[in-house]
Image 1: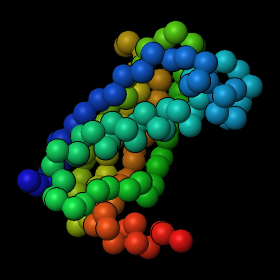
Image 2: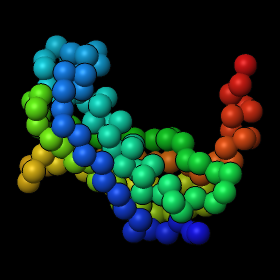
Image 3: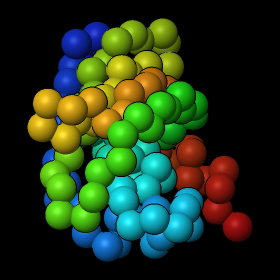
Image 4: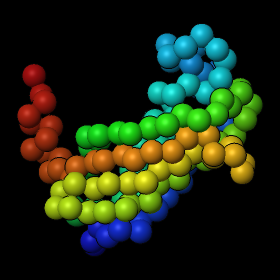
Length: 126
C-alpha cells in the first residue's frame, strides 16, 4: 500500500463535560476545549492513513497549526476531517477542519512522520 495525497477520514464527537476547556485546563468556560479539538483532528489524520501504512510502521505527530474559530457547547456534535495534502519522504502533511453542522469551528494543518514502530519505541524506552 502507498501513502498518496487525497487519503481522507473523519471522526465525530458529541461534546460532554469531559471535552470542555474547564476539564482540559485550557480555560474556565464549559465549551469544547482547544486541546480536545486538536486530539480530534489528530485522530482523523491517524484514521486517514491507518489502512495504508507499510507493516511495522506508524505515524507520529510532529507539527500543528490550528485556528479555533467558534465555541461549541456541551451536547453539540462536531466532526473532524483530515485530508492528506502532501507526502515528502516520511513527512505527511494534512489539511484538517472541524465542523459543527455547517459551521466551521476550527481549521489548520497537522504534520506527521512515518516511523518504524519498534525503532521509535526503542528510543523512548527508559
